[in-house]
Image (cartoon, rainbow, N blue to C red; front, side):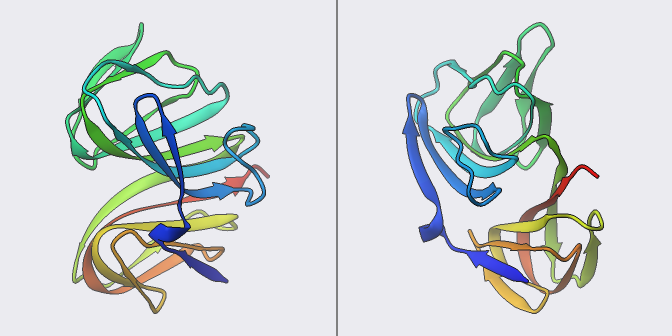
Length: 185
């Protein structure tokens, strides 16, 4: 079983500092506003360089990676960092976190489930990506380029998800984020 979501399937919402495009939410019947999700993948674009406070999300593990622009994060009483393109920052959703800069980012949120976020720059290399066995969701987001995964040709901004834990990359040049979501045993 697999499915491909296109950009026109994304759910768009505006907030005080910009726009968020929700690409995927798990379980499928959940919604972000009710905070009843276990996994959420989105892309956000800030519209100002001003300091912006991240929404507090207790019990949520957050993963964020810069796609474009200038992005600095300040985790209060912990550390500050400038996020480089495709670098993945992992932090707790209840940390008091501020961002600075005008940027576009890729986000993964996990609440009460296991999972992870990875990045790969595939240059016409065939390979197999082995993710956690018995995952509820294994997914790939095509950042740029074209790539074939499990015999499905994907292009930039396609989101592919499956319940298979092995991703066979057979051809293509593309930058991808990929990962998994798995309920605790």
